[in-house]
Amino acid sequence: MAGITARKVTVQVPAKLNLCLDVVGEDGKGYHLLDGGMLAVDLYDTLTLCLEEGEGIEIDCNRPGVPLDESNLAARAARAFFQGSGAELSQKLRIHIKKQIPAQAGMAGGSADAAAVLVGLNHLRGMGLTLPRLMELGLGIGSDVPFCLLGGCARAQGRGERLETLPLPQGVLVIAKPVGGTDTRGAFALYDRRREQLRRPDVEAMVSALRQQDGAGVGRAMANVFEQVCAPDAVHALVKVMGEQGALGASMTGTGTAVASLFPDESAAQRCLQLLKQKVLPLEYLGLHRPVEGGATMLEAAPPSP
Ligand code: C5P
Image (tube, rainbow, N blue to C red):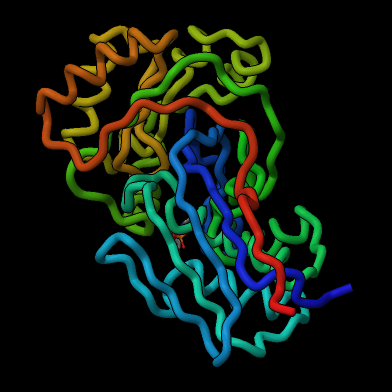
């Protein structure tokens, strides 16, 4: 039965990487159909949701520059949850976002927060919506939201809603984001202009390498069609440096601009990290990460006041 089951919940949600990304068609409604492998990594946004006296949605965030109005995907997720679940927002919903996922990186920062809000509200309001229903609501907010709810490793098809779980790859990732981002809509428009000339990532090879736990195979299949379309020079330079440092593979994630590289073990990844720390290129983000199971997950819930 629906009802307020807690007054405050905290939800943690991992960043997403595209290990492999191709565009395979269009849905006739203004979106492109994708195919590829997605991976959750241990870099998290943490959201605290709180119901208080008052009305409306109030967002605050530890990182300056994040929009705090209704354009924030966290606010849009809250609206979609109340509309889609039939629950009523009769109090003020306060959302605090502790951001660690870099912005404009292709790591689903906004979608991750939307997924966390859906999970948090589902608990806070005791609605008991199933994961498939939350994913359905999530897809209306952003293409990466269903994966951010599921997490782990998955082949993602359609707009990102057809998800098939795969085993996590072995190894350690170095993630680096050069200065500046790309515009997602613009990236798809550029793709449309150049689609005939592009080399295609081998998604089937990625899926079978993941299934067989073949790290070298996963590395070889790391590729993103958008790298040929909209990647700035710094992305190509990072892919090259990571390869020279012994990465099994390296590619841009999403429409950019973060680059992820897979190493067989921590010491190899550390060597690459240390080199990149020496300011080979100006970076907005640099970190060493591991694959993780699970998506947006409840951390704690404070009971309702008596
Ligand atoms: O997901 P988001 O709303 O950020 O996407 C921005 C724009 O990118 C969309 O309006 C659409 O033009 C394009 N897009 C697309 N196919 C996708 C995702 C985004 O064409 N799967």
